[in-house]
Length: 208
Image (tube, helix red, strand yellow):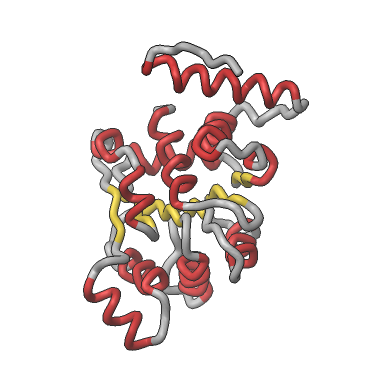
C-alpha cells in the first residue's frame, strides 16, 4: 500500500479534500450553511454518519457566531472537551471556556443529592449570570437537567451543543432539545463524545 508524502501543514487540507471526495462519491450533499461543522466532525472521528445524524436548528451556526462575538462563555461537561476547545480564538472575542465537573462544591452537592456532577454543574453554570453556550459531549444528565430547569422556569440556555455518547438516556436526552425552541446542534442517536463537542465549537471559531 502506498502512502502520500505531505508536509505537516498540508495534512489537514488533504484530509478535508478526501472527506469531500468521499461525500461526493456517496452522493451526499451537505447544507452549505452548516457543512463546515459536519466536515469538522467527520474529520475528528473519521465517521461519515455525522453527515446524516447532525441536527441544526434554524440559523444555528449564525446564532453561535453571534453569541461568541458577544463574549459568551462555553461550559462543557468534561475537562476533555474543555482541553480540546481553541481557547485562544475564543478569548479574542472576550469569551472563556469552563468546566465545573472537578469543582469541590459540585462534587459535594452531587454526593449529597445522589445526582451526577454533570447535572449539578449545569446548575452552577446557570447561576453565572452570563450568556452561555453549553457543549455537552459525555453526560446526558447534563442535557436532562438543563431541560428540567427550562420546564421549572428557572433557566433557559442560550445555545446547546448536545452530542453525548453512550447508551443510557442518551437518545432521549438529545430528543428533548431537538424538539425544543432552544438554538441547538444535536447529534441524533448514540454517537458523539467530548471530541465532537470540541470539534463543533472549533469549527465555528475557525469560520469566524
